[in-house]
Length: 228
Length: 228
DNA sequence: TGATCTAATATTGTTGACAATAGTCCCAAT
DNA sequence: ATTGGGACTATTGTCAACAATATTAGATCA
Image 1 (cartoon, protein in one colour):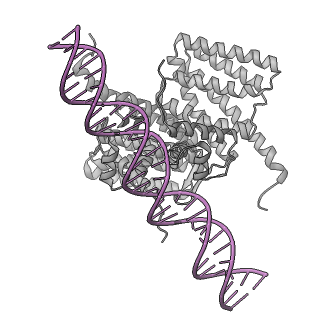
Image 2: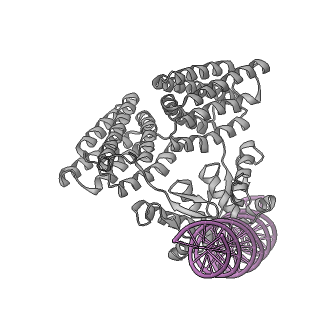
Image 3: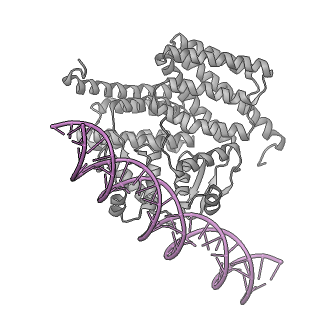
């Protein structure tokens, strides 16, 4: 049983990232180094290293001699992310269809059936659905076997997406529809039809993006115009 | 005249990145912290922060308690990068065609004419051609106005591409062809034809990728098969 | 001769103190 | 009353020493 060697900076990095994503540390909040170090029981050295990493995944922004703040989420940024996801996950789906092993494909199908069951059980509304969605996309990305693609998506972007879901309460209000789209994508992958898988995935993410834009309008309409 | 405030870690980070890209620090080489710190005249604290950042842009890999090494370049990784570039820069070209200002478009065209002149002058073979190519792509990416896309491409991927060009001497052996493709892309952008710009950009990068694969085969063929 | 254990060395991880910069608060002057 | 300046505080940036881990070299035994 090999115990994974790690460092204080790593562990604290993970904890802080989790706190940021779940909103324990609010967006836009200033990060005070001595305070954070005290909270996590380490000194400022490793803490600063952890913060460098968190900065690299763009969860915080740092200004020299001033300090670090948690990023402020906006619908605009979220749309940017979804544009990129559409492109990259389309690619991932195509590659996955071409290179996934039989075992990987059957595991993906298994995941979908369990999601289906879960949606029926909870009548289509549950927190778990969100993480399930991430799972599905996560597996396809890994199925692409393109390590850099995997790192870009699973490493950074999905963290952001999870953060938005937590804090904008972006639970999909169309779980059945999403599941159906997942099912189509899965079928295309099973059949090794890369082109179709890519097309379906892009449409799937574009649908989600449109969904976000609708919500965005609904939320900004009541205030009706910021400048007369 | 506002002097940009910065930190030792930042400055040293830039210098080390440059050394890695240009091969002053060879691929696969171990990075010794005390030695590096001495060379750059700083202590290990800021140096380690710089290294964290360099790790984040995947120019080095770190193992806890063991140390950091410069990444080893491989054709496989390069192909991975080009797959991603094809996807993302296709997107960037489409967005650029839709959102670039008149001024940006004319500057892009100006850049191309200067490239054309330069190719004629040097009869199609020069180091500058490489950086010129980066310039062209760089501008289109910025024209997309998608800040996250800009960061992903200009921040990390292009650094890698430049590193490969330096160390694999990947000078394009088809500068006239590349210029022609650039010209087509530029025209599509000028006309605001996003779909065409995307398609052309994807084909352009795919061509470059095929070019790399050819060279890769030519280089590995002589050894003929690693396992009988 | 070769392998394995052990001690010595080098390198990385961590800490607390010091220096430099930015933010604040209070006071005075118009 | 408001604005400008200056001292004070808080926070970030940097350093050098210490602790923990990995690597290396040498010695011992089969």
